[in-house]
Length: 368
Image (cartoon, rainbow, N blue to C red; front, side, top):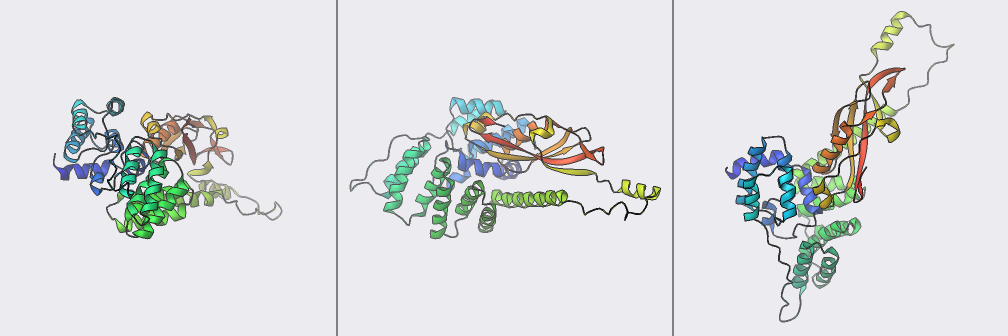
Protein backbone atom coordinates (compact mmCIF):
# COMPACT_ATOMS: atom_id res chain seq x y z
CA UNK A 1 0.00 0.00 0.00
CA UNK A 2 1.64 3.27 -1.09
CA UNK A 3 1.61 6.45 1.08
CA UNK A 4 -0.53 8.23 -1.53
CA UNK A 5 -3.23 5.55 -1.43
CA UNK A 6 -3.23 5.59 2.35
CA UNK A 7 -3.42 9.39 2.40
CA UNK A 8 -6.54 9.39 0.25
CA UNK A 9 -8.16 6.71 2.42
CA UNK A 10 -7.25 8.38 5.70
CA UNK A 11 -8.66 11.72 4.67
CA UNK A 12 -12.03 10.06 4.22
CA UNK A 13 -11.79 8.24 7.56
CA UNK A 14 -10.72 10.94 9.98
CA UNK A 15 -12.82 13.90 11.19
CA UNK A 16 -12.49 16.74 13.69
CA UNK A 17 -12.49 14.11 16.42
CA UNK A 18 -8.84 13.32 15.77
CA UNK A 19 -7.59 16.86 16.33
CA UNK A 20 -9.74 17.58 19.37
CA UNK A 21 -9.12 14.22 21.03
CA UNK A 22 -5.37 14.43 20.42
CA UNK A 23 -5.35 17.69 22.36
CA UNK A 24 -7.42 16.22 25.20
CA UNK A 25 -5.75 12.81 25.56
CA UNK A 26 -3.42 12.90 28.54
CA UNK A 27 -1.66 9.71 27.53
CA UNK A 28 -0.04 11.28 24.46
CA UNK A 29 3.45 12.73 24.84
CA UNK A 30 3.83 16.48 24.32
CA UNK A 31 6.28 17.52 21.62
CA UNK A 32 7.17 20.66 19.73
CA UNK A 33 8.53 18.63 16.83
CA UNK A 34 6.36 18.98 13.72
CA UNK A 35 7.25 15.41 12.73
CA UNK A 36 5.03 14.18 15.62
CA UNK A 37 1.98 15.23 13.60
CA UNK A 38 2.88 12.70 10.90
CA UNK A 39 2.47 9.76 13.28
CA UNK A 40 -0.81 8.01 13.91
CA UNK A 41 -2.47 8.60 17.26
CA UNK A 42 -4.58 6.03 19.11
CA UNK A 43 -7.70 8.01 18.19
CA UNK A 44 -6.69 8.02 14.49
CA UNK A 45 -6.55 4.23 14.48
CA UNK A 46 -9.76 3.64 16.45
CA UNK A 47 -11.78 6.09 14.34
CA UNK A 48 -10.47 4.54 11.11
CA UNK A 49 -11.28 1.02 12.33
CA UNK A 50 -14.86 2.07 13.04
CA UNK A 51 -15.34 3.79 9.70
CA UNK A 52 -17.71 2.18 7.20
CA UNK A 53 -15.90 3.51 4.12
CA UNK A 54 -14.17 0.18 3.44
CA UNK A 55 -14.34 -3.41 4.64
CA UNK A 56 -12.72 -4.25 7.97
CA UNK A 57 -9.89 -6.31 6.37
CA UNK A 58 -9.16 -3.40 4.03
CA UNK A 59 -9.10 -0.94 6.93
CA UNK A 60 -6.74 -3.19 8.87
CA UNK A 61 -4.40 -3.52 5.87
CA UNK A 62 -4.34 0.24 5.29
CA UNK A 63 -3.67 0.98 8.97
CA UNK A 64 -0.99 -1.71 9.33
CA UNK A 65 0.90 -0.33 6.30
CA UNK A 66 0.52 3.24 7.53
CA UNK A 67 1.69 2.32 11.04
CA UNK A 68 4.87 0.77 9.67
CA UNK A 69 5.47 3.73 7.36
CA UNK A 70 4.61 6.61 9.70
CA UNK A 71 4.87 5.26 13.24
CA UNK A 72 2.54 5.92 16.19
CA UNK A 73 2.41 8.37 19.10
CA UNK A 74 1.51 5.97 21.91
CA UNK A 75 2.78 2.95 23.81
CA UNK A 76 1.12 -0.42 23.09
CA UNK A 77 0.02 -1.45 26.57
CA UNK A 78 -2.14 -4.55 27.15
CA UNK A 79 -5.11 -2.29 27.89
CA UNK A 80 -4.70 -0.37 24.63
CA UNK A 81 -4.29 -3.60 22.65
CA UNK A 82 -7.52 -4.88 24.19
CA UNK A 83 -9.33 -1.66 23.17
CA UNK A 84 -7.98 -1.92 19.63
CA UNK A 85 -8.95 -5.59 19.34
CA UNK A 86 -12.46 -4.71 20.50
CA UNK A 87 -12.57 -2.02 17.82
CA UNK A 88 -11.71 -4.59 15.12
CA UNK A 89 -7.89 -4.62 14.93
CA UNK A 90 -6.48 -7.87 13.52
CA UNK A 91 -3.23 -9.65 14.42
CA UNK A 92 -1.15 -7.93 11.72
CA UNK A 93 -2.23 -4.45 12.82
CA UNK A 94 -1.48 -5.26 16.47
CA UNK A 95 1.94 -6.59 15.40
CA UNK A 96 2.67 -3.37 13.48
CA UNK A 97 1.66 -1.29 16.49
CA UNK A 98 3.96 -3.30 18.75
CA UNK A 99 6.83 -2.78 16.29
CA UNK A 100 6.36 0.99 16.34
CA UNK A 101 5.31 1.32 19.99
CA UNK A 102 6.62 4.48 21.65
CA UNK A 103 8.83 3.87 24.66
CA UNK A 104 8.04 6.64 27.11
CA UNK A 105 11.11 7.51 29.12
CA UNK A 106 10.18 8.21 32.70
CA UNK A 107 13.61 9.31 33.93
CA UNK A 108 14.09 13.03 34.45
CA UNK A 109 16.42 14.92 32.10
CA UNK A 110 19.93 15.50 33.36
CA UNK A 111 20.67 18.78 35.07
CA UNK A 112 23.07 20.99 33.08
CA UNK A 113 26.48 21.55 34.71
CA UNK A 114 25.81 25.29 35.04
CA UNK A 115 22.47 24.67 36.72
CA UNK A 116 18.91 24.07 35.43
CA UNK A 117 17.84 26.27 32.54
CA UNK A 118 14.43 26.78 30.90
CA UNK A 119 14.99 23.83 28.57
CA UNK A 120 15.62 21.54 31.55
CA UNK A 121 12.32 22.50 33.21
CA UNK A 122 10.41 22.31 29.93
CA UNK A 123 11.71 18.81 29.15
CA UNK A 124 11.05 17.63 32.69
CA UNK A 125 7.52 19.04 32.42
CA UNK A 126 7.02 17.16 29.17
CA UNK A 127 8.20 13.94 30.83
CA UNK A 128 5.74 14.44 33.70
CA UNK A 129 2.89 15.16 31.27
CA UNK A 130 3.69 11.99 29.30
CA UNK A 131 3.09 10.03 32.52
CA UNK A 132 -0.18 11.87 33.16
CA UNK A 133 1.20 13.95 36.06
CA UNK A 134 -0.10 17.28 34.80
CA UNK A 135 0.15 19.12 38.13
CA UNK A 136 3.89 18.48 38.39
CA UNK A 137 4.30 19.28 34.69
CA UNK A 138 2.55 22.62 35.18
CA UNK A 139 4.92 23.60 37.98
CA UNK A 140 7.97 22.96 35.80
CA UNK A 141 6.55 24.80 32.81
CA UNK A 142 5.64 27.79 34.99
CA UNK A 143 9.33 27.99 35.97
CA UNK A 144 10.41 27.60 32.34
CA UNK A 145 8.11 30.45 31.29
CA UNK A 146 9.57 32.73 33.95
CA UNK A 147 13.11 31.94 32.73
CA UNK A 148 12.29 32.36 29.01
CA UNK A 149 9.14 34.50 28.74
CA UNK A 150 9.47 34.84 24.95
CA UNK A 151 9.74 31.13 24.16
CA UNK A 152 6.46 30.29 22.42
CA UNK A 153 7.00 26.51 22.61
CA UNK A 154 6.78 26.68 26.41
CA UNK A 155 3.33 28.27 26.22
CA UNK A 156 2.25 25.70 23.62
CA UNK A 157 3.18 22.91 26.05
CA UNK A 158 1.62 24.65 29.02
CA UNK A 159 -1.59 25.30 27.09
CA UNK A 160 -1.97 21.56 26.49
CA UNK A 161 -1.37 20.81 30.15
CA UNK A 162 -3.92 23.42 31.28
CA UNK A 163 -6.42 21.92 28.81
CA UNK A 164 -5.96 18.51 30.43
CA UNK A 165 -6.41 20.13 33.84
CA UNK A 166 -9.64 21.69 32.49
CA UNK A 167 -8.44 25.21 33.29
CA UNK A 168 -9.73 26.62 30.02
CA UNK A 169 -9.19 30.27 30.95
CA UNK A 170 -5.50 29.52 31.51
CA UNK A 171 -5.42 27.47 28.31
CA UNK A 172 -6.81 30.42 26.36
CA UNK A 173 -4.26 32.77 27.93
CA UNK A 174 -1.37 30.45 27.01
CA UNK A 175 -2.35 30.21 23.36
CA UNK A 176 -3.00 33.96 23.26
CA UNK A 177 0.60 34.45 24.41
CA UNK A 178 1.82 32.11 21.63
CA UNK A 179 -0.10 34.17 19.07
CA UNK A 180 1.39 37.40 20.45
CA UNK A 181 4.85 35.92 19.90
CA UNK A 182 4.02 34.25 16.57
CA UNK A 183 0.83 35.42 14.85
CA UNK A 184 1.30 32.89 12.04
CA UNK A 185 1.04 29.86 14.31
CA UNK A 186 -2.02 28.06 12.94
CA UNK A 187 -1.96 25.37 15.64
CA UNK A 188 -2.15 28.00 18.39
CA UNK A 189 -5.26 29.54 16.80
CA UNK A 190 -6.86 26.11 16.46
CA UNK A 191 -6.06 25.05 20.05
CA UNK A 192 -7.29 28.38 21.41
CA UNK A 193 -10.52 27.93 19.46
CA UNK A 194 -11.13 24.55 21.11
CA UNK A 195 -10.72 26.11 24.54
CA UNK A 196 -12.89 29.13 23.71
CA UNK A 197 -15.67 26.85 22.49
CA UNK A 198 -15.63 24.91 25.76
CA UNK A 199 -15.99 28.27 27.59
CA UNK A 200 -19.04 29.04 25.48
CA UNK A 201 -17.31 31.86 23.58
CA UNK A 202 -18.38 30.45 20.24
CA UNK A 203 -18.07 33.66 18.20
CA UNK A 204 -14.42 34.05 19.22
CA UNK A 205 -13.78 30.35 18.61
CA UNK A 206 -15.30 30.67 15.15
CA UNK A 207 -12.87 33.45 14.24
CA UNK A 208 -9.92 31.39 15.46
CA UNK A 209 -11.02 28.30 13.54
CA UNK A 210 -11.26 30.45 10.38
CA UNK A 211 -7.82 31.95 11.03
CA UNK A 212 -6.30 28.51 11.56
CA UNK A 213 -7.79 27.30 8.28
CA UNK A 214 -6.54 30.43 6.50
CA UNK A 215 -2.97 29.98 7.81
CA UNK A 216 -2.96 26.23 7.20
CA UNK A 217 -5.24 25.24 4.29
CA UNK A 218 -4.41 21.57 4.98
CA UNK A 219 -6.03 21.77 8.43
CA UNK A 220 -9.22 19.83 7.70
CA UNK A 221 -10.24 19.90 11.37
CA UNK A 222 -10.31 23.71 11.39
CA UNK A 223 -12.39 23.80 8.21
CA UNK A 224 -14.77 21.17 9.61
CA UNK A 225 -15.17 23.25 12.79
CA UNK A 226 -16.08 26.35 10.78
CA UNK A 227 -18.70 24.35 8.87
CA UNK A 228 -20.02 22.77 12.07
CA UNK A 229 -20.57 26.16 13.72
CA UNK A 230 -22.17 27.52 10.53
CA UNK A 231 -24.52 24.53 10.49
CA UNK A 232 -25.34 24.93 14.20
CA UNK A 233 -26.17 28.60 13.66
CA UNK A 234 -28.38 27.79 10.69
CA UNK A 235 -30.21 25.09 12.66
CA UNK A 236 -30.80 27.43 15.60
CA UNK A 237 -32.04 30.17 13.29
CA UNK A 238 -34.49 27.76 11.67
CA UNK A 239 -35.63 26.57 15.09
CA UNK A 240 -36.26 30.12 16.30
CA UNK A 241 -38.17 30.89 13.12
CA UNK A 242 -40.36 27.82 13.57
CA UNK A 243 -41.09 28.75 17.20
CA UNK A 244 -42.28 32.27 16.38
CA UNK A 245 -45.86 32.85 17.41
CA UNK A 246 -48.43 33.07 14.58
CA UNK A 247 -50.08 36.45 13.94
CA UNK A 248 -53.15 37.37 15.99
CA UNK A 249 -56.24 35.83 14.43
CA UNK A 250 -59.26 37.87 13.48
CA UNK A 251 -62.22 37.73 15.86
CA UNK A 252 -65.14 35.52 14.96
CA UNK A 253 -67.17 38.56 13.98
CA UNK A 254 -64.48 39.75 11.56
CA UNK A 255 -63.78 36.35 9.99
CA UNK A 256 -65.62 35.60 6.75
CA UNK A 257 -67.65 32.44 6.66
CA UNK A 258 -65.49 29.46 5.65
CA UNK A 259 -66.36 27.56 2.51
CA UNK A 260 -65.41 23.98 1.48
CA UNK A 261 -62.75 25.53 -0.76
CA UNK A 262 -61.23 27.23 2.31
CA UNK A 263 -61.00 23.87 4.09
CA UNK A 264 -59.17 22.37 1.12
CA UNK A 265 -56.76 25.32 0.98
CA UNK A 266 -56.11 25.10 4.73
CA UNK A 267 -55.39 21.37 4.52
CA UNK A 268 -52.93 21.99 1.70
CA UNK A 269 -50.81 24.26 3.95
CA UNK A 270 -50.05 21.48 6.42
CA UNK A 271 -46.24 21.25 6.74
CA UNK A 272 -44.35 18.02 6.31
CA UNK A 273 -42.69 18.49 9.71
CA UNK A 274 -43.21 20.61 12.81
CA UNK A 275 -40.28 21.78 14.94
CA UNK A 276 -40.28 20.69 18.59
CA UNK A 277 -37.03 22.39 19.59
CA UNK A 278 -35.01 20.73 22.34
CA UNK A 279 -36.73 17.57 23.56
CA UNK A 280 -36.80 16.94 27.32
CA UNK A 281 -37.42 13.70 29.24
CA UNK A 282 -41.05 14.79 29.68
CA UNK A 283 -41.46 14.67 25.88
CA UNK A 284 -40.28 11.07 25.75
CA UNK A 285 -42.09 7.78 26.14
CA UNK A 286 -38.73 6.00 26.28
CA UNK A 287 -35.46 7.95 26.48
CA UNK A 288 -32.45 5.65 26.09
CA UNK A 289 -29.22 6.50 27.91
CA UNK A 290 -26.05 6.46 25.81
CA UNK A 291 -23.33 3.92 26.50
CA UNK A 292 -20.13 5.78 27.45
CA UNK A 293 -17.40 4.22 25.23
CA UNK A 294 -14.56 2.87 27.38
CA UNK A 295 -11.91 4.47 25.18
CA UNK A 296 -13.58 7.89 25.38
CA UNK A 297 -13.89 7.59 29.15
CA UNK A 298 -10.23 6.59 29.50
CA UNK A 299 -9.26 9.61 27.42
CA UNK A 300 -11.46 11.86 29.59
CA UNK A 301 -13.65 12.94 26.69
CA UNK A 302 -16.59 14.88 28.14
CA UNK A 303 -19.17 17.39 26.96
CA UNK A 304 -22.69 17.84 25.69
CA UNK A 305 -23.58 16.20 22.38
CA UNK A 306 -26.58 17.55 20.45
CA UNK A 307 -28.43 15.08 18.22
CA UNK A 308 -30.88 16.27 15.58
CA UNK A 309 -33.74 13.79 15.28
CA UNK A 310 -36.65 13.24 12.91
CA UNK A 311 -39.78 11.58 14.30
CA UNK A 312 -42.58 9.84 12.44
CA UNK A 313 -46.27 10.28 13.28
CA UNK A 314 -45.96 7.67 16.06
CA UNK A 315 -43.01 9.39 17.76
CA UNK A 316 -40.42 6.85 16.58
CA UNK A 317 -36.97 8.18 15.71
CA UNK A 318 -36.46 7.66 11.98
CA UNK A 319 -33.22 9.62 11.67
CA UNK A 320 -30.62 10.81 14.19
CA UNK A 321 -27.45 12.80 13.50
CA UNK A 322 -25.15 14.42 16.05
CA UNK A 323 -24.20 18.01 15.23
CA UNK A 324 -21.15 18.49 17.42
CA UNK A 325 -18.50 16.82 19.54
CA UNK A 326 -15.92 14.05 19.09
CA UNK A 327 -16.94 11.31 16.66
CA UNK A 328 -16.72 8.51 19.26
CA UNK A 329 -19.20 10.36 21.54
CA UNK A 330 -21.40 11.37 18.60
CA UNK A 331 -21.84 7.73 17.59
CA UNK A 332 -22.83 6.76 21.14
CA UNK A 333 -25.35 9.63 21.34
CA UNK A 334 -26.86 8.80 17.93
CA UNK A 335 -27.30 5.16 18.92
CA UNK A 336 -29.14 6.17 22.10
CA UNK A 337 -31.37 8.60 20.21
CA UNK A 338 -32.40 5.92 17.71
CA UNK A 339 -33.48 3.65 20.58
CA UNK A 340 -35.72 6.37 22.06
CA UNK A 341 -39.41 7.01 21.44
CA UNK A 342 -41.27 10.29 21.92
CA UNK A 343 -44.86 11.42 22.29
CA UNK A 344 -46.40 12.00 18.84
CA UNK A 345 -46.43 15.62 17.66
CA UNK A 346 -49.80 17.11 16.65
CA UNK A 347 -50.90 19.54 13.96
CA UNK A 348 -54.42 20.80 14.60
CA UNK A 349 -55.14 17.68 16.59
CA UNK A 350 -53.71 15.26 14.03
CA UNK A 351 -50.39 13.34 14.36
CA UNK A 352 -47.58 14.75 12.21
CA UNK A 353 -43.89 14.17 11.60
CA UNK A 354 -41.58 16.30 13.71
CA UNK A 355 -38.00 17.44 14.12
CA UNK A 356 -36.15 18.28 17.30
CA UNK A 357 -32.93 18.02 19.27
CA UNK A 358 -31.84 15.66 22.05
CA UNK A 359 -28.88 16.73 24.22
CA UNK A 360 -26.77 14.06 25.94
CA UNK A 361 -24.20 15.01 28.58
CA UNK A 362 -21.04 12.91 28.96
CA UNK A 363 -19.32 13.53 32.32
CA UNK A 364 -16.61 11.67 34.29
CA UNK A 365 -19.47 10.09 36.27
CA UNK A 366 -21.23 8.67 33.20
CA UNK A 367 -23.56 9.70 30.38
CA UNK A 368 -27.12 10.96 30.51
